[in-house]
Length: 576
Image (cartoon, rainbow, N blue to C red; front, side):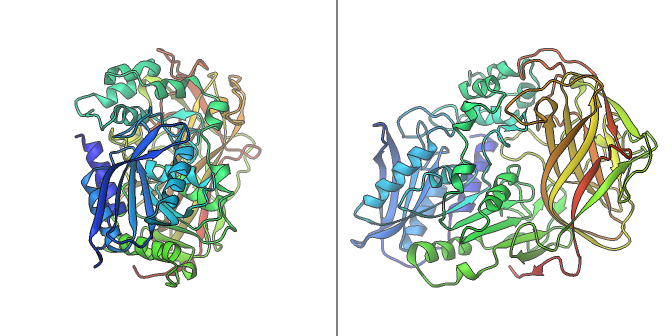
């Protein structure tokens, strides 16, 4: 078993296992066949109280094997609390029939499974769902079809529509999805530990990089065959459909979850819907597993009792226990820096004021040793810019290991920032603390000598000791600057305007800290290298060097939009 797989199973255990309670003996049945509308049957293991009384049901659907120890333990403990726990292998995985292809059947299969459960004599017809990552995806896909038996869901670390982040983000592909596909390419988890993953991510052309992992992965090649947001991607989209659902949802993620945007977008899209709640902790994709990520320790309060929260949630919505969950604060989040849990009525907090920090320099913003600055005063110069050369064969790096289960974290970028192919803009040292809490966005005016280019930006917080802490980042592929519905090649030298979503963060910056923005043209291996020729994505073996210009003058003011909250009233602190 690979370290990637062990990490996933650990995540499942921590997401699914709850505190045991006294109760009846557990009735366990394995490989129960659940029929789908097309005649395919899926395998489910069912744990329920040994009673003749119908009970509410918690459903988990997984591509990672429904028979692992985490599910067995979770099934027994939920059954002891008076729930039936159904864990099902998704189509084509484990003991389920059919062919696995990510996402395409999850909505219909989820609907059919929920309605099958609701009809069983041991079920009282009330079904909830839980799980994280792909196990979160299957929940929101099913919820978008409005199955009558589905009462509530708890989607954790859930990606958005697949062409909005994983595997494609604003036209840039995530090479780590290649190893994810390889690991789940059989009926059971595949051992990819002996493969050179970084070598596969670096392969040219990227289209056939799957061969370096000993496989031909149809979804991988299909993704690259569909660079536009065409009917292929639209058929896999769920976020618009989810807006029709009115069921209670508990959305959970972490500031360093590499699919955080799915959680924040889904919560925002359901604004005004009843009983929508959001929890964001100081976690990566493996939520609530450790107080420390890399070199950063988020303190003793970083971990919370999620098990108790799950029990309380399902008791309220599946058993109608009047425990007051619906009266809780809608948003609970962790403010890094001073390591405090806070509550709010909405996200972002209403107290946030979005402040423009403008890029400025004397024309030499290259590297952290350059003269790039962030200022709050709008530029007045008639002409002002910075230049650098972007070489896809020597791409600017994104700090991460090769595991698909966690891409990046609160990493120190001092070393990469020594390079000349990155522009670095740093604010003045703070004279008093400042809370940065909410969405981050970059507004960029830029030109390129190439027919296509990427603009990769990163917002950081620089400590007094120089540690350049990544808060979050974003990217846009220039050919899709007007949307993914069409490709528009760049006209070399023409200035274009770009809006770059850098997702969200929440941190208290202390005295002496500084804000920083990086601008580069690659973030490899988080994103594939733009070959800068304008040719077919993923199908080229050679690239072109591009001369890049970022403008920050009176008529082309580039800036980062920073969500600043008043330190004294940013939010109300809560206990764990």
